[in-house]
Image 1 (cartoon, one colour):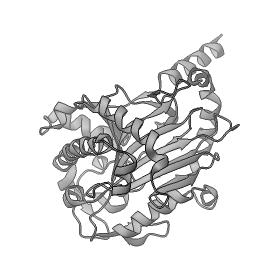
Image 2 (tube, rainbow, N blue to C red):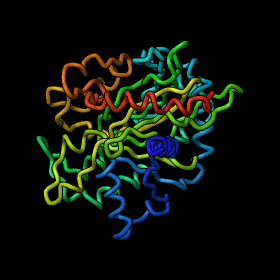
Image 3 (tube, rainbow, N blue to C red):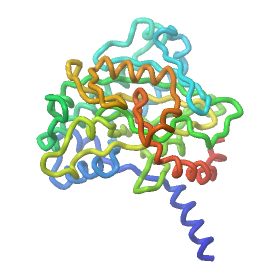
Length: 347
């Protein structure tokens, strides 16, 4: 009976998932009070991820933009839409654009209306508040490694690389197989809206049970919160480009995460915070020095082809925009088995 009780507790824990630490949009707009600031720093240093809820008009803006991109992405010229074969043989179509640039005219023609730009503007505005709070919280305690760009300058003046993704699951695949292995993203952090998935009726709904991350040694399904939420997730840039001069516990921790696709199509948008164009920083699996253009090419190459074969050669390896985490494979095998309890709900 004790064993049975442990099983039920495990299933209950899995069903609940990991609820992200969350801060309100109104809190983020102004300097944080000491208690909130401490919680903000702790969330990024312990798990490397947090949610900002209550973003004005984000819920309808996200639904309109992701719905429009799903419907119009087939009309975008092939030279602008990157096609990917993922490791579970699913396919991903990606529109990549620098945040400071306008959407290309051919994209605006294929995807008429303001929906995509409205989502970009909304995320950029919240992104600015997040960067300012981060500079106030830890900026002065971070010293550059191998370059001369301060954390404040990198956060204030760095480039942001945006992606709109449409994922199409491979037919007859195992729904428990991972589309993306456990990995860390490139850059300082990624700001993204939770994905939507296409239902059998053709409508878009919340994508649940498919975004996985490591939490205190366990692999958990992430719960993002309400539909007006924007998620901020730390990449490998902080740990590779900066060191904490006073308190190493302040350094944001990169989030190891993986993706399993639902049984139907999935659409997503995110913005990656990269260094300024003129900066040269440590990157690549061999710790070579890269500039902004090198990073964009690496992320683009990763969009064109994803493979985890290289991860068998080392404990971790940079591959385009990701660092693959080999040591998590045992935990991933467990989540593949355990999360089957929720798959019937998605059908």
